[in-house]
Length: 342
Image (cartoon, rainbow, N blue to C red):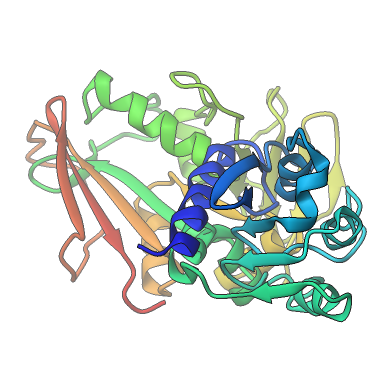
């Protein structure tokens, strides 16, 4: 591993620390290097707060060293005014002569402009240091800007014999647990890592799940329910919730009805992208999950296989590919799939 790669890997490690709090911004880490020694570092910690480059430069105690130092950053510095001033301007003001960047920012507001601005102001810029690793770290952000939809993770639990739920009568409600109680902590970790959690109307009617983060530290994801014709009763909801429908736009204390026309999954995801929702964990029932699979609108699938047989019930979605990763947790087996076609 070269020095460039070693220092960039440190940037990526720092950037990953912001995964639960920077949405819809990207994960970014930065280090300042003087004579092959890190003298300052930082990462973007929360949406609306200082960017990684600002924190790294400000952390350098002896500012006189900056004029002979190199700034490493895991994503192209911004050159536009947003929640914070442009990082490219600060870099120039700091007299840093050289910047090493992992990859170009896919956001059209940046998209090479930051690098060009630095070069126009006589800053040497080196690009494409660990670019694949940087894009993988920011897979949610890149998907949002390149595919105009959120990064989609499908999740469900199924029995050993392939059932996702028991047979229910129309009045039977409540959760039927297939996975072990210990595995629930992983689900809460997954929720904390995504910007939003989505279910369908039927799952809301049966379970009315909170979809919050409770067993690990982290920010609660945005709660989304798909209900085309608003057939469910949402009058008792006391958690901020988006209702994706085809009938009305309306906002109240806890409910935000978002109208989508024509009403189909692709348009729903486009609307979520317009709302700057970077990623979605889909915890819906079989019908909702199968819709995402049918139209190949998913990036990852995580299946929890519980240690029990149901013998009858609602069949789980069928996949025609092998898992990329398999591991056990408590009594359960977890299968993880990455979509090879997106």
